[in-house]
Image 1 (tube, helix red, strand yellow):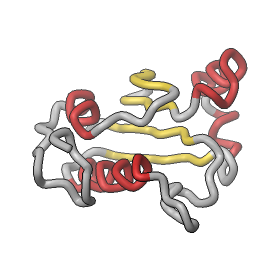
Image 2 (image 1 turned 135 degrees about the horizontal axis):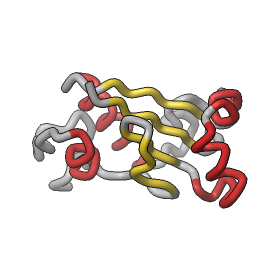
Image 3 (image 1 turned 180 degrees about the vertical axis):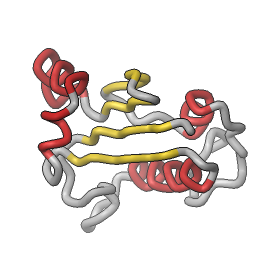
Length: 116
C-alpha cells in the first residue's frame, strides 16, 4: 500500500479548513486526501502547531526545516521519499505519485480535481 505523509505549516486546526476565511487550496486538498484514502492509500497528516514532535522525529523533515525553515512546508512524502515541498499538489499530481487515475469530475469538493 502506498503511504503519503503530509507535513503542514502551522494552522489553526489539523486540516486548515477552519475559521472565518478558509483557503480554497486547503479545502480542495482535504477532498483530495479523502479521495486517496477511499482509494486505499494510507494518508497521514501532521500540523506543525499541533504535532511538532512528528517534525522532529522525522530526520528528512528535520533536515528540510533546518535548511529551508518553515517556508519549505508543506512537505509531501510518498513512501518516505520527498515528492513536493512548499506547495500543495493537485489531484492529478497525487494520482501520479500513487499510480491512481485522477478521476476528473468526481471530486469531493467544488473546484477540486485535475480538471478544475
